[in-house]
Image 1 (cartoon, rainbow, N blue to C red):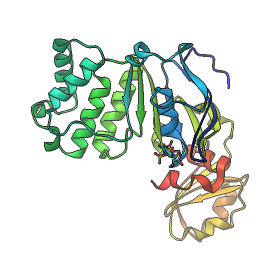
Image 2 (image 1 turned 60 degrees about the horizontal axis):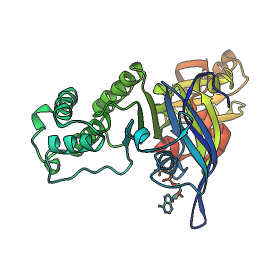
Image 3 (image 1 turned 30 degrees about the horizontal axis):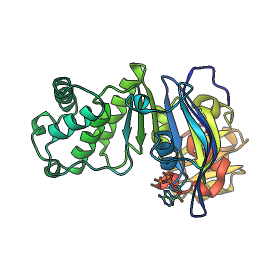
Image 4 (image 1 turned 180 degrees about the horizontal axis):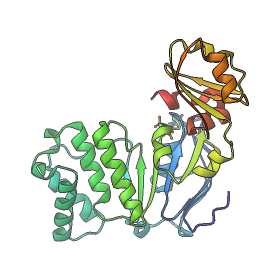
Length: 307
Ligand code: ATP
C-alpha cells in the first residue's frame, strides 16, 4: 500500500520464527508520520514480536526496519517511547526515583527530568504519590506511572504494546486523551491491541494481522469505505435467533445487538422482524472493524471481540 504521507517507520518484509512457530511472516508496514497507527490482531497474531523487532530488541530472521529511511540506532531509539507488554518497574524504588532514572537513560538532565516527572505526575493525578514506593501503588497507578516513563523524554514516536489492558474506564479515557494530545503535537503513535473497538475510535491507519501475516493495512476510513454501506446494525430486545433468518452474507449476533451484511432493504428487514423482536434501533452503516476482520479472516479472530 502506498501512502501519500511521509513515512516515519518502514517495516520491510520482516519474518521471525521461534522453534518452528512463525511469529511474523514476511510483514511489510509503512507508518506515516504524525498519525495513530494500530497494529491489530488476536492473541498470538505476532503484534508484540513485530513491535520488538521494530525497536531492535529482537533481530528478525529476515527483513529490516527503517526509521526515516535509516537503520535504527541508539540516537533514533532515544526519540522513541516504548511501553512493553510486560509491565514492571523497580518495586522498592519511589515513583519519582524511577522516573528520573529512566529519563536519565534517555539522555535527559536530572533537573529537567525531575521537573518533567512532577508535571506528568500531576497530569495523571499521582503528584501526591511521587515519594511512594512502586510496590505501595495500585496496579492501575503503576501502569499510569509506566506510561509517564514513556512520555518523560518527550519522544517523537510512541510505541505502545496493549496500552489499554488493565486500565479502568476512567484511566483508559485519560490514556486515550493523552494519546490524542500527543498526536495533536505532531507525534507518531503506534499501538497494538486485540480490542478492535478501541482502535476504531482512535486510529488513522491500521494493519490487521493474523498468524504473523498482514491481512489488510491502510487508512481506516478507506478500509471501511471499501466495504460500502452493506452493513445493517440492529439494536433489539428479545430472542435474536429470528435475525438468523434474514438472508445475509455475514452476521455477528450478540445478546441485544447485531451486525448483518445484507442487501435487503431496511423496510423488508423490519417487516420480517416486527412481530418477533422489539427493534430499538436500526441503521445501515459502514462495517465495524470487527466485521471487516471477520470477513477477512473468519473465525480466527473470534477472541478479538471477547477479550
Ligand atoms: P498477544 O496479543 O497474545 O500478546 P501477539 O499478537 O503480541 O499476541 P506475539 O507475542 O508476537 O503475538 O506471538 C506470536 C507467536 O510467536 C505466538 O505463537 C507466540 O507463542 C510465539 N512467540 C512469541 N515470542 C516467543 C518466544 N520468545 N519464544 C517462543 N515463541 C514465541
